[in-house]
Length: 86
Image (cartoon, rainbow, N blue to C red; front, side, top):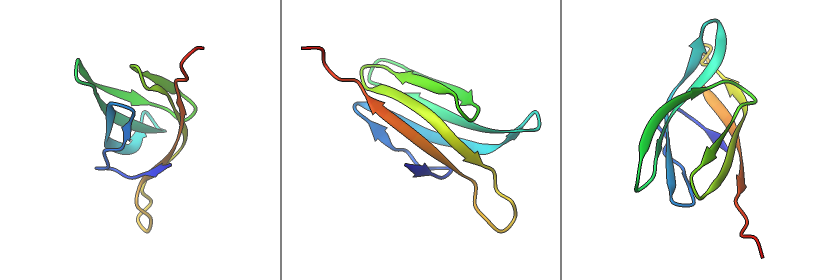
C-alpha cells in the first residue's frame, strides 16, 4: 500500500496516521501516530523497519520517498495480518 502524508489507513482495529514523511539525520524517515481503543503513540521509522500493531498484525516500511520538489513524499507499507492459531 502506498501512503502519503496526512493519510490514516486502518489495519484491523488500529488506525495509523501518517504524520510526516521526510528526511531525519540525513536519511529517509516516516512518522506515524498509531491509535487503538486502548492507546495512542507517535513513532518514527526507517525503511525496512517493522512495527507490531496491537491485535492486528505487523506493518513493515518497505520504502520511503521524501518529496523532491516535483514529486510528493510517499511510502510503501507492507501489512501482514495476525492469523488466529487453530
